Length: 254
Ligand code: NDP
Image (tube, rainbow, N blue to C red; front, side, top):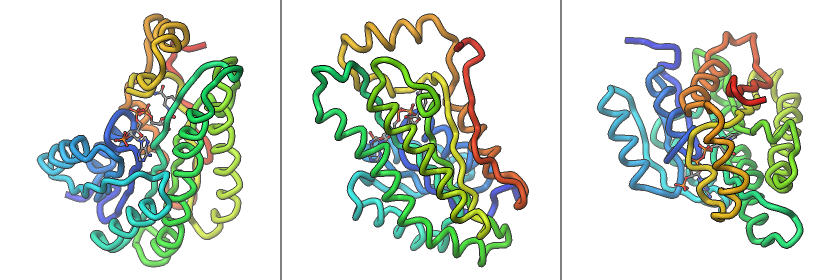
């Protein structure tokens, strides 16, 4: 059976949980061969088995994308196995909240390393292949979807460096869109509001208790599948239509 993405290859970073795992499942269901990239190999293997059982195709790539060589190798392995790369979903991310005053700068380094530098590493490695896919594949278009956040549009007290990384992702996305869109690589940003994932779990008990848990208790948040639907929408538009920005919020979140 042919589906909208049959014959394409997608690479999803942060595919071991949350939005990345849901996106990989969704793209595979639409017919893409999917490279699953993250550090937790066991999670990736379980997801790959699930995708294969449903008739899809998946490749497990254990990589830390903050390491430029590992990010490059992840892209290289994908192209080696599937022969091409049509879709890059830059989803891996880290959110460590709290005041700037008295913060541990190591936390900032870790966020900047994943949310900004990791995204740059995979993007840089993928671009030559995406440009080539436009020429070679019947689809004649390629896609980068960067998972930013409402925190890339609005700044809040206590979100400082996370805001910095996501505002940065938005700016970079629009600049790159202008650079490559006329070569038919579509570059867009997807900005979720609250989604039910592991994202908040890496924070201290104090931050979770004050800034994260109350929000999740009071709000009917999105499911990872809601965001995966958004990614699927962006990458299945006809060749002449490019979604530069998609902002998906829980109805409940003001
Ligand atoms: P999760 O914590 O569930 O997923 C984060 C993913 O990133 C994991 O798969 C993790 O895998 C991966 N990751 C982290 N560091 C690295 C690294 N160095 N190298 C490779 N992979 C890495 O959270 P979400 O699914 O929520 O997050 C996905 C994206 O969505 C993030 O960019 C986040 O900022 C964004 N977002 C989330 C929102 C939410 O409310 N949940 C709202 C708005 C945006 P592993 O640990 O195995 O490496």
